[in-house]
Amino acid sequence: MLPNALRDRPMEALAEHLKASLNDRLWAIFDEADQPREDACRVAVPYRPDLLSTKVYPLISCYRTGRVNVSEDRWRGELRWHMPMATNQQSEQQHYLYWVEKSMVDILDLYQDAEEPCIIVDMSVLRSTLGYLTVTRGNPQTALSFPTVQIDFEFIDLESKYGVGS
Image (cartoon, rainbow, N blue to C red; front, side, top):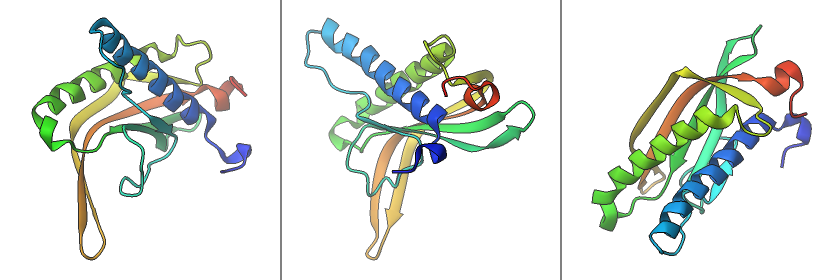
């Protein structure tokens, strides 16, 4: 594990908030249907994981991809939600991907009103895509397909700019 000074605390906090909020929303649906709960996210990480080596799904990864404006401490970020392909439920996966995408966008929109937000997301430039990411590696080739929701966003890092959350 990285020393605290090198860890991206705002991305860690956002990833954990997304995980908890997404699970709360899905659990409410299962509770209302009187069904056993399932997690919408089992792990949240502040980096882009190697999907072929990762063992725990569904997962959220949330990380910075670059700086937009230095003086405003404005950054670009990428948020991805992945789960392994379930061929027996392919017809339902597109509906579930849409639900995850809509829920994550709602959660991002509400994040600045959370108890201790570390970032402010600019919702006007947020872009999302739903699809299937196929990852290949090795000899012989190993290929796995992952239903994926990807959200590209810009944000102001409050922790860096104002010392919030430190």
